[in-house]
Length: 283
Image (tube, rainbow, N blue to C red; front, side):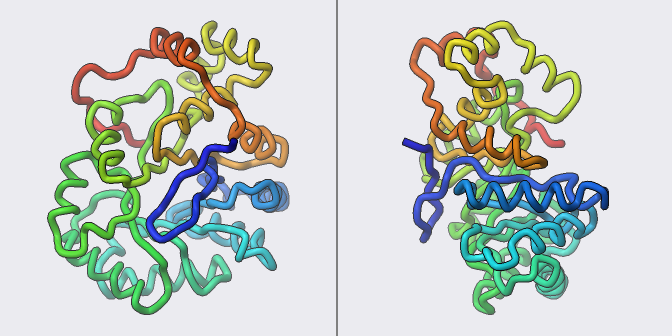
């Protein structure tokens, strides 16, 4: 049974979506990126996550092209720069994103990270966009527990639909307080970089002996194991970058992977959960 995540007012969504960070930066890769996103939608990976920051709108343009004729099959997320998160600028930023995405609404619009615009203004701006029909729901990204508590205390803050944060096996800090807090409130968490960013950290995960042995026994890749581990947490949706059709297929297959108690215990021994409050990891 594929893993799913519930957002308020929405049917269950597959717990793995498609990320677009670094898309739209290289014209030579554009058609490959479009094909990958389309393949993901065809495989049921409905959630596509992007942002006005990614390639300064270039990623949104790639998504818009990929979704021509199939917008109704996708659940579209974009993010606004913190300095664009007041009433006037948020409307303008959202309208620019909608034009690039070639759609008239977003399923979810996120504040990309905490900024200097008062949260009251941002919430009011999000509510205005909802009334205008330009967004269905709103949320935040890169917010730690105290930030989330501040949101919840404000008028309208209880309507925050999600928090998108860095989360992977080598970065488990949110498990100490932020993730349980969100789970208690049935507030979905979107995990970006669920395979860790490219580089030494990802390589250390991919080459770990414990993970390689579990993956071998299950006849899956280490990447699939890492995705399955992330979405094993209740209410967590992973958004790995979807850069090729092959990788998208592999990601989609990870929805069917289940981990037993012994496997989870072995992973915990290799990568222990946090025993104290950790600073929120951000990339």
